[in-house]
Length: 71
Image 1 (cartoon, helix red, strand yellow):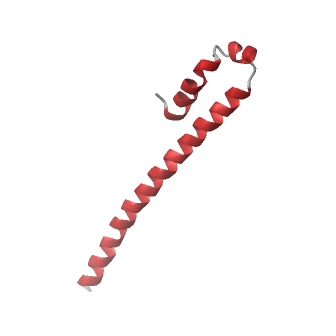
Image 2 (image 1 turned 90 degrees about the vertical axis):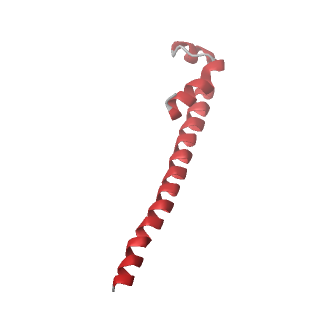
Image 3 (image 1 turned 135 degrees about the vertical axis):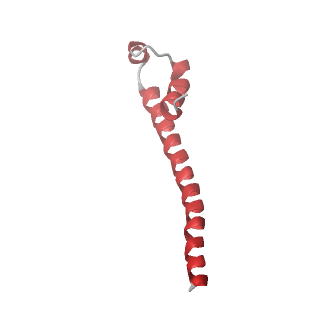
């Protein structure tokens, strides 16, 4: 019985490791998706619309990066 308990306690640790890895990858993919969608949406705007938002074409990538990653 003690041996079976040791196996049971070891299994969640490895699944937690992989669970954390997959969660980290999923978060990165989600953030990158937000970045790409923001770039595409802002790129579709006309220059006048961007100016109304206080943006220029040169700042689209920086604004999208800040929206996705917060820096």
